[in-house]
Image (tube, rainbow, N blue to C red):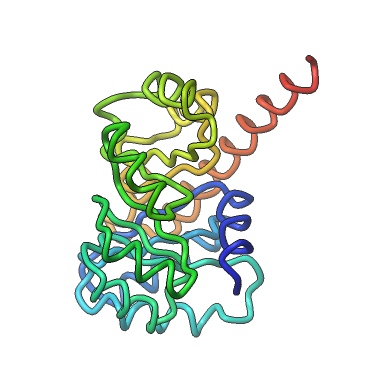
Length: 223
């Protein structure tokens, strides 16, 4: 799958579920629930023990499903990025910017989404080829930060991650974010092994995302 197609699919699907858990089996079960609920972008973090095995099993399971993208998260270096890529990850996400990882992802034409907190970090990441910047932790700065940064840098695609929930997701979309990373609030039911609850929560997030983006589109049309 070409890099441009992956980037387009990430934006089209909109939501990226950040999956942290403690076993490969739970990662697969939670992924099943997320996909059942309509979420197609899933970032499986390398804090999951044997994350590479989980990514390989999930990508194999859903290889014939159109639009499902399994990526790797908490990738701190190029060695881990290489393992993730060989395991089938379609995109790489990090809480920080790492030049070596950026170079590796450029070589293999894999979307790299590094975590940044300052405009200077974002500029450096963009110069290294990152087309989406993860604002992390986004709850520290809030949606107003995105609007202020995009004023001088309108070409910047910012994905907030950290503290996103059903109540504030619309604020981020209104600030100009088209891709949203969601973790704790989405996966809360999994803490009690309520995987049907995860699917229900996923449907709620997908519905809210669609409502908010449609509202934004209608506002542009009205102009």
